[in-house]
Amino acid sequence: MSSLEISSSCFNQETKLPSSPPLAEGSAFEPLGKDKSEVEEKAKDIIKFTAEKLSVDEVSQLVISPLCGAISLFVGTTRNNFEGKKVISLEYEAYLPMAENEVRKICSDIRQKWPVRHIAVFHRLGLVPVSEASVIIAVSSAHRAASLEAVSYAIDALKARVPIWKKELYEESSSSWKRNKECFWATND
Image (tube, rainbow, N blue to C red; front, side, top):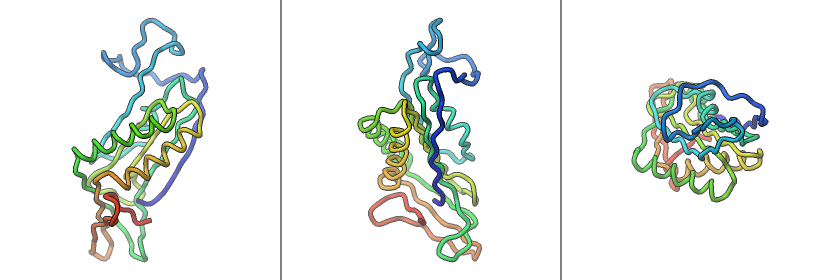
């Protein structure tokens, strides 16, 4: 895990949402002939573990809400060095049933601590080359303080509680799996 970016984007009630395909029954938005500003919106927790490249735009779009004035993001990427060694990529493995369950608990914890609308937690599995995202967390809320605090809490809790292991692959042909003694998710920070 290498870099930290936390940003807050402001949206007002007049922000137009991107066009999207027709909604399926039971989706988060169910317009019933109402203006978008009147739509009752269900809170969403979107959790994904994937071997595919992560997209900041895709994840941030998932948490947009006309009820919110802030979207905060954490994007963790692979950096090219650790303790003087040249890193060429990271490799992640997870025990998925437990990992998904722990992330759901983290989302629940966030909802009890802060008034947030939507939460998205995406984590990459497999090889992650230098500069690509390993994890993206996005949270929307009415005001920036709640989403910024929730994102910070989410990455700290993910690192401490979710069973994800990271292997650093070095240019010198050596590699090592990392695991902190008190947490599942290890970092080279």
